[in-house]
Image 1: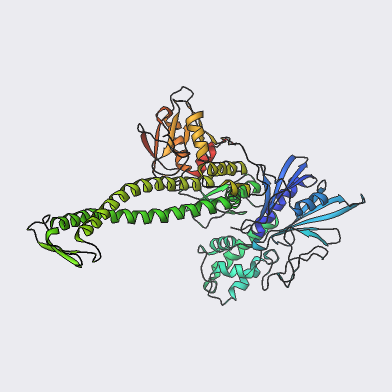
Image 2: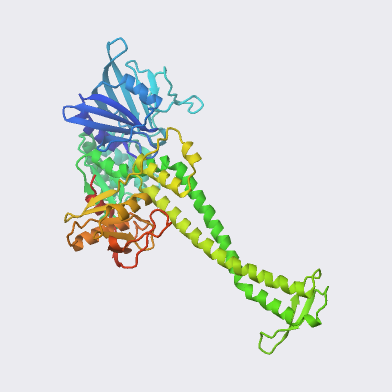
Length: 593
């Protein structure tokens, strides 16, 4: 869900208590819609992420560093000029809006103390980051809004900053009492559900919060507002009063909702969510930054990598689709060659009856010695050819089909191998976590010929990176190290060069995925270590969301690479198979950062 105003209030309260008084040391813009402020305060150094990504606009602390582009964008350069070195006076939220204002104490070009304001509008598709001076004039914005883009509100340097227009017919929920809400609900004639009615009455509340208030009041979030009983209205008044008091006191609790079946994140809130009645796993996290990181960071990283790998995805997807169409045509041609014996049979029958056939006939009536009862059949003839030449024509078609079968069988085998390889590359793109991982993939595609040197040179600011294996690193609950390759080159290095012969190799059976190595260090691996390593192999495959995934495992000594095989392709004959169900939350606990 997008970050609502109630949750943002709790986030702002938390951030203000931790970085107010801190100083901005560095400013980064790792993505076109993200700003990272490196802040040092009494509680130490922290990195504050401000994202305006559509559907993922937010602000919170992050632990991992973001890759800083070699050439910073213009807005980043402007922020470095105006806010780098500034002291954060406070972070505030205007009137339960999805806006956070960072007040900065800084100096102007003449060294005179002045105020600046970094306005973070976190409003979905309309999110923006705007830098204002002490008079409220816009210095610049991450996204400038011209007159032809919005007739109501322009965001351009030199103009005065104005708050977004208030939503019509909606009120601030903190300005309404519980009894007032109950009275309004009693007079409502709408047949819509109570949750939708609340959403239409107030701004700052998300659909999730409206459903929660309605559920606590009536036990049914979608109960029609015009069917509420007197008892429902009394309960609604009490629930709403309790809710607004909690919001005003900034007493929110970071609540993360996850699906029970696979523990993947589903939603989040700043209040305890009860409406799912045990259908969701509720987790209380230590802070709102941890909450937003848990919900957004993994999805955001995957989206950033997809955006950066867009050129590769296009090239590989087109190559895969083109190859799939070619294989389909070859399969059809191969199926047609299965009738080749008919051509030989016709040639033989014409040859056996040459004495009674004449040139110029359209058909030849001959006795079919191959069929039971030797019936008389007609064979199509070319009137321009002699009977002998017609027989040779049928023999030629037979030999052509026979040769085509051999050639097509070999081409289809090679094509299927290429198709499997391209599928594995697409899976590896989804595993990429950094620009270095993408550079390795480009290097791999260059080696295999799917990416030309011309295409690689065409990339702006591209610096060839050495192919260095940096696989995923896990440690089992009983202390064994486990490594998983992120791409085919890493898989080869991990399995064929890094691993020892008595280490255990894992891979999903007939499913694209990573090579996984359980490091034994000469010890006998425990059942727990084997199971967790198999789960890691299933997780780093196309079957990560499936149950009872077949995972083959064997000692590394049994894994061989055929001569000329593509990266990541190996063969093995001595193995066992385990069936496991990967659980993301459990596997992430084993991850070594």
